Image 1: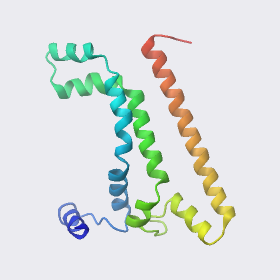
Image 2: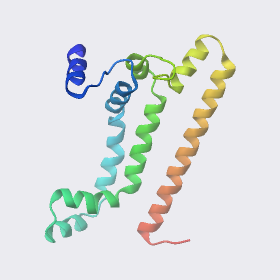
Image 3: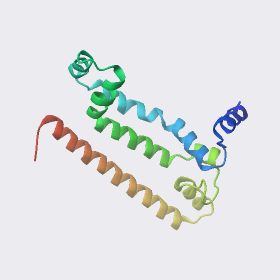
Length: 160
């Protein structure tokens, strides 16, 4: 079955899925997509139903309502979903190693590099890579927290 999938992608899209960057991106997207569902579901559930109904009454179809009403009003949830999915993908190890391998300058990512440094007992470089990933994760989450706080103040009408 995996050979048929790869043959399909190669035949119709000209994309080789195994041991290259494009295949790594496709596999990571499929693997990390479920982590996006919960924040988006919470965002859509928090939407004011009256806004959606007003959009339908004013003649907008479902697609226009989604683009012009729903998505702009769930920006914090959308950003959170994107960041969580991205963070999961950055830290992913199994799919990256299985699909992308560890080809230098092509498919080698930080999580695989940390694994390889630990494997050869180069703990100094493993700690440096790990510290960089932790710092980037912290800064990203801090940015999301600040953005969501600002959006909440804007939506509730509270200004500093």
